[in-house]
Amino acid sequence: MKIIEVKDLKEHLGEEIKLRGWVRNYRKASSKLRFVIFRDASADIQCVAFKPEMGEENFDKVKKITIESSLEVIGVAQKHPKFEDKFEFQLKDINIINIADEYPIGKKEHGPDFLLSQRHLWMRSAKQNAVLKIRHTVYFAICEYLNNNGFYRFDSPILTPNASEGTTTLFEVPYFDLGSAFLSQSGQLYLEAGIMSLGRVYDFGPVFRAEKSKTRKHLTEFWMMDAEAAFVEHDENLRIQEELIRFVIRTVIDKNTRELEILERDVEQLKKADAPFVIMTHREVIDFLKGKGVEIGYLDDFGAPEEELITAEYNVPVFVDRWPKEIKSFYMKRDPENPDLALGADLIAPEGFGEIIGGSQREDDHDLLLERINKEGYKIEDYQWFLDLRKYGSVPHSGFGIGLERLIQWMSGVRHIREVIPFPRMINRIYP
Ligand code: 4AD
Ligand code: MG
Image: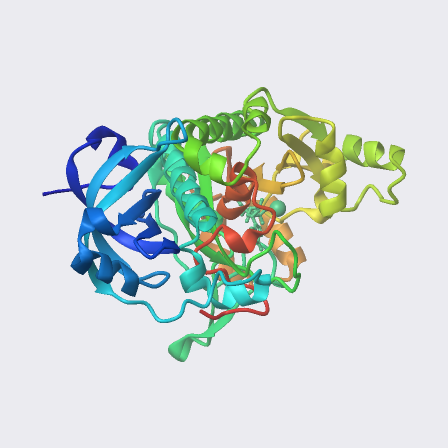
């Protein structure tokens, strides 16, 4: 007998087939009729258990099942009698693999804390399943774009001797006789070494930030894709980011129609974002915010409410460009036209999903970089290798880092970041 997935049922109407999966729910209609909502990894289907069709012995097996029991079901798929485009599965027999204990989720409305403590089970729900599928698409779409545009995958280390994004969010771990190591906040600095060999490189993996903030957009462990390219200057860096993000939008719309529907994502809104992005300087943004009555200064960063105000004006993401050097990282190159500004831009997603990318042209002058490392109070010996890159054949170069979960939030329309990663790590949660 053919074993197929629920999503392929429509190609096997009228054939006797087998499905393997779990019981999402069931309902007793009468003493001889039961409905079982059956799910596998691909989709859900309503199974009809009708005693006269199945025979007493097989029907008795159906009576034993509980929510989340694992089963093989054998039967025939047909068009749903009432709904176009829907199917039903007439059961002939079932093989019970495991009878589930009383399932903790689903009897009533649950709060997020309870659901997070049951994350290992909660991920079976239709919405969580849809988000995880979109995560898969976004991840591989990013890789596909980069692989097709001359970037080599280059795996940067997780255990590092130094900070790339400031010392306030470092996770420290004991490291044998060498004292302390730190979990990587971004692979960027290592990629800057990689490009002098490979030209264009990217990494993609977990990064760690001891973020004290409890927000809908912060995790302590999240996934970042850092890309870096030799001979690419600031404007081209922005162009690459825009092209990549627009490729991701189109890929998600193309591959995840069903998942976007399950999540009730407004796809029109996503389609509108696949158009030229807006570029504003940090100064223009501050002026705009002041005009909206926000109390903010020219040396300030923004929080979520400001990000929402900025992007409310547009359907496309906004690059906030040329930041005051004081509030950006030491490695950013200065604007040749105004040395008080950094050649860095953040990309803010529309619909209030916030910053999805941070990027910049990098300082390629040895002495200027040395000066800034000193100013940060970092130990020169820790950064000697990074300075070396400016001593031996330095070239102009740029790069950027995408927060994978932020991008998935935007694509799937999920308001809280804890739902877009299989096992979220936050300031107050490390279980399960
Ligand atoms: O803006 P960030 O800090 O930039 C860097 O780390 C650069 N070194 C990247 C580079 O140029 N290669 O982080 C990049 C992105 C942010 O724009 C945001 O989307 C995400 O990472 N991000 C977080 N996502 C979830 N939780 C957090 N705590 C995050 N912090 C940053
Ligand atoms: Mg940033």
